[in-house]
Length: 257
Ligand SMILES: Nc1ncnc2c1ncn2[C@@H]1O[C@H](COP(=O)(O)OP(=O)(O)OP(=O)(O)O)[C@@H](O)[C@H]1O
Image 1: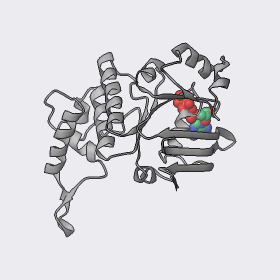
Image 2: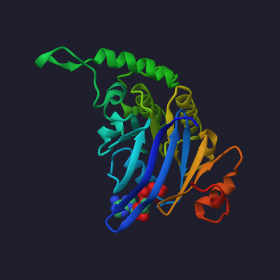
Image 3: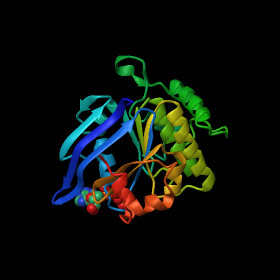
Image 4: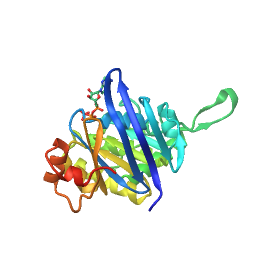
């Protein structure tokens, strides 16, 4: 068995009296792209928030590369190599691409009270990254994020996670509101991310997008993982839809063990 990158065990989350996660176990392997599916309210966002440090879990354990970690904040998650890209990409529209790539982690030059951001280095790295993420047009690193298309913004956010060598990149609805070409760009990028050695959890309401890029599908329902080993190569979109809504016996067959 390959070494797991992420192991979540017995994770529970209560929001007051509401139990959003029930004894969740979830594994992500090295260089694995996992699709996380479930209806509205199934618990996907809560699970991702726990893993990315946005909300604390009520009980349970998280192991990264075999080591138990305490994730109490997004800083803890980033230190553990977990980077999350949300629907809105968490980019600052008014700032340049270069500033957004390094947001909060700007390289510094100078010393003592004369410290300042190393603008030149940031722009140099940004130019290389833009090329790597396939933004073909000659976009200067000083361009404001607000001047980019939705797909280009997603690419910048993903490039940021790749540059900082995150082990796990969580993409929460990355193809939402994107056009066909932009969606294909993001999906292509997810494949490149895996080729470059990263793992990924991909959440999308559009099952067809998930089917195009993932190695394995996990389905949640009512705060529980109801199937964790669905192979998109041997399962149809319709079968997965039935598991999501709870209409299929397949859920029992492919259930978490
Ligand atoms: N801050 C909160 N306070 C109280 N209950 C919450 C909170 N956040 C989520 N919940 C509840 O937890 C459950 C799981 O919600 P969650 O947002 O994780 O589901 P989801 O699968 O991400 O749904 P969606 O696809 O609609 O985003 C739901 O019953 C929801 O109402």
